Length: 108
Length: 122
Image 1: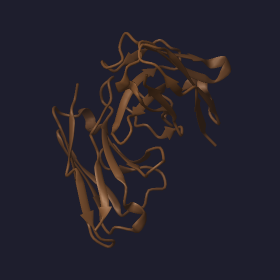
Image 2: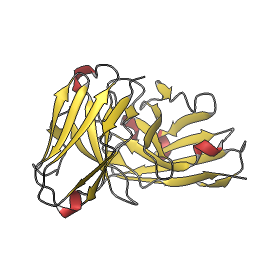
Image 3: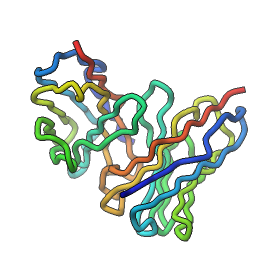
Image 4: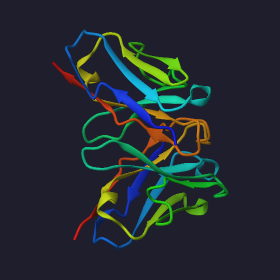
């Protein structure tokens, strides 16, 4: 099973700042089958990125993803108030999907 | 519009059983693979199980293998999760999930229901 470790656990930033979230895999993620999800309180997760760097439908271009192999990054270029949420990475290259433990992005 | 509506959650005693259902609409259910993902209160996401469109391929997380059974009825556009020998650590919101690509093989989860809460407690 591929274990995903996200860092930091909590990130405190102000609107307008740049956010960088990390996701590290215990073994290489095949074909960059790495996704990012955003979850707000009381809501289901929403797909943000797939294939490590492709934005899902309707996701603004301030969100970007990068990485390959075992190291992946989600970047939010300029934080908007609605971006403060919990973010999860997920690998979907194996029959047993795994998620990271999440990074909480909170307002400073 | 794609809709996934879970039902069947509730309070159950340790060792008990519960059957979750997910009613799907807005897409051709019989051609889509389906999944269950859960989230314990205040915790992260955990993939539980997946089933292919024809029920040929089924997978489980180690944490539920031998206790949970995923199934589907394509004629009723419905997905199920039979949960037996429930434990306190199974307490979670259970989400019904699918993929717009049809197959979730090598595709991310982009269709999510709102979830149903299962509480295992005496």
